[in-house]
Length: 194
Image (cartoon, rainbow, N blue to C red; front, side, top):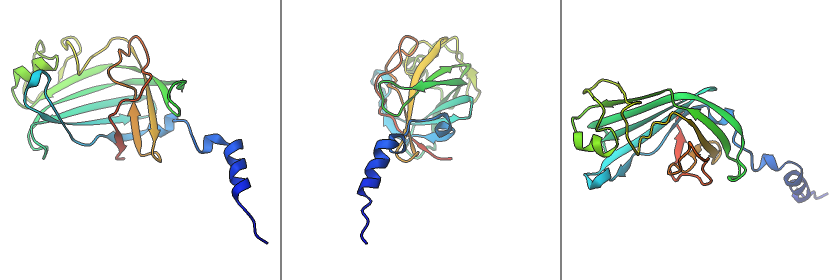
């Protein structure tokens, strides 16, 4: 007797679509996620630098760290930006299939500089901050613009975990998330590292 699995597969797809197109859950977020090192042009046309971002989700908090290097071998760090705070999942996205809406609160924002580069710090909105070499400095009240915006609102964001649970993407980072939740995914991809 020959048995076809096509009807069973079709029935499974019809009866349990969440098995094929599962929504991102809070459990999916937990862990450490990291971007590839990427070369970035400094704001204002300065020399390029290399950026790597890391985000860590626990069951209630998110930490994000952006490390900026002068070289592709990561031997010459320029500065590190670190932010931390609680997050709350607030349901599935209605605009991005499979994404989870989040509300995030930024409790801390610190910068540690490893090189004295005042022009670069001004170009990334930290020219008014009293930064000290190799010391973490709270920049919550002195940061003045992108790319490291510190908000005193609840950030409205979304996150999608896909590619078998190995890729995480946030909502479009160019959107003012104090006002509206992104309706598109950002192109930056984080890969699960632990």
